[in-house]
Amino acid sequence: MKGKFITIEGPDGAGKTTQVKKISDYLRCKNIEVLVTREPGGTALGEKLREMLLTLEGESPVPEAEALIYAASRAQLLNKVISPALKRGCIVLCDRFVDSSLAYQGWARGLGIKELININGWFLKDCWPDITLILDIDPCQSLKRLQGKKDRLEREALEFHKRVREGFLKVQNLYPDRVKTVDASLNPEEVFQKILFEIKKSGIIKM
Ligand SMILES: Nc1ncnc2c1ncn2[C@@H]1O[C@H](COP(=O)(O)OP(=O)(O)OP(=O)(O)O)[C@@H](O)[C@H]1O
Ligand SMILES: [Mg+2]
Image 1 (cartoon, rainbow, N blue to C red):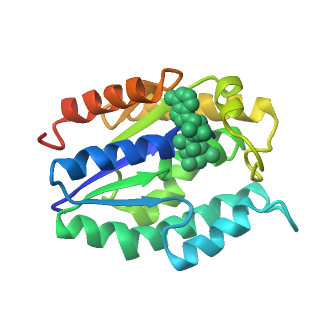
Image 2 (cartoon, protein in one colour):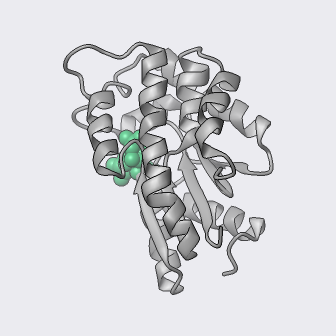
């Protein structure tokens, strides 16, 4: 793979989409080709699966089904969008990826982080991210940032969101070289500077 794969992770309302925009703006200013995508979604099929996962209407998937639907969306995105872009030499910037499944379904839903690594590892093969930034924040603070209509996962109880945060920290412990945590309680520009520091330090992009 010629390109590099960067993923931004963290609980609901942590500021992922805000930071993805800042990072992509920064890289494009440096004339670096960036492909921005998101999970679940990013493909026609993935967007349909996203709707199924996040809607409040109808029957909710059981945790195992939820884990597999996320994985299906990810397999589609990887094969249709991410791998081709990496082969072309792009920097791929993805708003959530496999580590969300490890934290949400593996830890917070209790399916087991190892089990989720096995399910996802089956199709990810050697296409794990080169660097993952986890935006770490107390859910009491991040959930306050979300205004208006909340999706199915955002509506979960505070205890669930606390387990999600714990799950992300466990993932960081499992993959200390790849995964870095950033204090997301700071203002957007401060968070961005910390992300930039980690990306530069990793040496995966010369900038
Ligand atoms: N560092 C920050 N401090 C305060 N507010 C922030 C910060 N970063 C983002 N916000 C605001 O918080 C809200 C949620 O941010 P954003 O959509 O980037 O989070 P997210 O992690 O992508 O959320 P979701 O999980 O729902 O996709 C937005 O209104 C955004 O402007
Ligand atoms: Mg977002």
